[in-house]
Length: 152
Image (cartoon, rainbow, N blue to C red; front, top):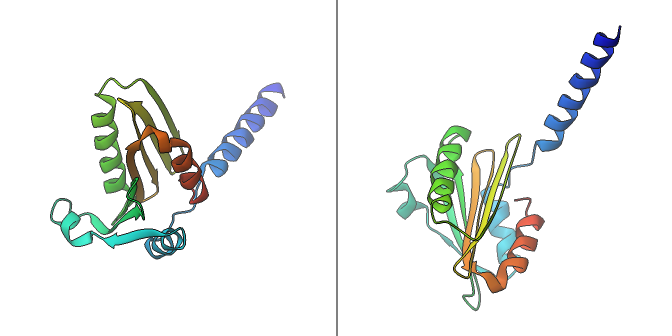
């Protein structure tokens, strides 16, 4: 009886954690609209990115009006290419010997942030989409809030 109760409890917790980990993918058009409303200049860089990675379906480069920092958005033709891109970028970032890092991997969501040589870098993946930012650490809190607002 205790084993059945324990099994049921573990199964419920597992299902709850898996369900809590699922995030909604931000569609490219929604990303563009949100960033424009926040007064970012948004540039479609798909054609130049596709020449480097043909798994990318659409890519935007969103820069603040005063050019303090930019956020890159990538939508891939599947979750596996997005995972591969994320893993490659995270490995590159991780090899720098940064001063402070954080990493989260839950369900369809992965996020890696680091501070190194006065720069704040974040790469965040939800399903088949990725956002990436590399900026002066002075803007880290502003960027973290923005990423949280868009679900990344």
